[in-house]
Image (cartoon, rainbow, N blue to C red; front, side, top):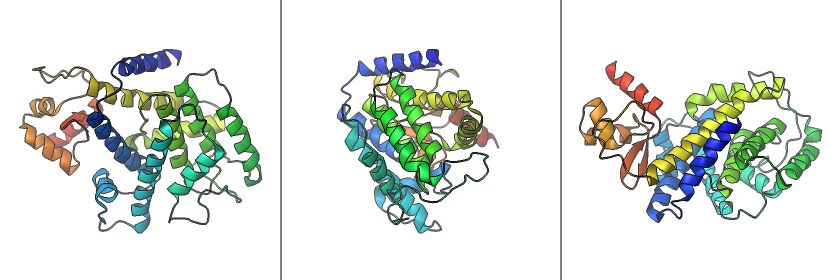
Amino acid sequence: MDDILKRLEAKKQRLDIYKPLPKELVKNLEEWFRIELTYTSNAIEGNTLTRQETALIVEEGITVQGKSIVEHQEAINHAEAFDFIQTLTNEKKRKVTEKDIRDLHSLILNKIDDTNKGRYRTVAVRLRGTETILPNALKIPDLMTEFMTWLQNKNVDHPVKIAIDAHYKLVSIHPFVDGNGRTARLLMNLLLMQEGYPPAIIRKEDRNGYITSLEKGQTKGHLTDYYALMYEAVDRSLDIYLEAVEPDRASIKEPTSEQRFYTTEEVAQLIKVDPESVRRYVRSGKLRAVKLGGKFIRIDRKDLNSFIEELKT
C-alpha cells in the first residue's frame, strides 16, 4: 500500500505545479464533481435517479416524472452538503469538529427526516444483507468522542489514508439512524480537499465491491480490499485533474488502447462517428464524460470499452 500512496503523492505534486488552476477550469471541474458525487453517493444508497436526472433536479430545479419526492430531495440535499464542505475546504488549518459532522448530516436528511437530522441515534440499527454488528446506541456519544480525538490529534499517516480511515471509522460507528454512508463519504472528501486532493468518487458500478470490502473490515478485520478500492477512487480523480491541466492530446492521430482518458475527437475516431455524435451520446447519458473548458473528456477507459460493446449489440 505504501507504493500506492507514493504514486498518489507523486500525482498530486504534478498537479500542484499548475496551481492556481484557471478559474474557468476549476468551475467546470467543481460543477462536474458536484453532480457526479451526488449521483453516485445517492445511487449507492438505492436512489434510482440517473446522472442526467440528478443534474436536471440540482442545476435546473426540474421535477422528474416517475421519481419520488424523497429521491428529488436526496439529490438537492447532497448537492447542498457538497457546497457546505466546499466552504470548509479552504480552511486547511481549521480542524473538522463534531458539529461539522452533525451539520453535514443535517443537510443530508433535511426535509426527509427532520426529527433525526443531525442527531445521534438512540435505537439499534442493522445493515440489511450483511453480518456486521453495529455499536449499541448508548455507546455512540463516547465512540464519537474517541473518533474526534483521533481525527483532531496529530497523525503520522499519509493524509489520503487518514481521510479513508475517517470514512471507515464513521460508517462503522454508524452514529445516525440514516445517512451515515453519505455523511462519511462527504467527510472523507472534505479531508482530501483540505489537503489539496480532489474528491474521491465511489462509482455506482463499484457498489457491491465497496459494501463487501466494508463488511470484510468490520467482521473480519481485513481491510486490504477496502484500501485498494478507495485508493483507486482517489487515483481516478487525480487523473481527471491531471488530464485537464497537462498538455492536450488532441494532436494524437491514433488514440491508443492504453490511454485512460479520451477527448471528444479521439472517441469519434475510435467509434467511427463525427464529434457531434459523441456529444449527443454524452448529452443523452449514454457516454459518461467530464466537461473541461468546453471539451468532453472520458473518465475511464473501462467505461468507454463498455460503451463500445453496447454499440455492437
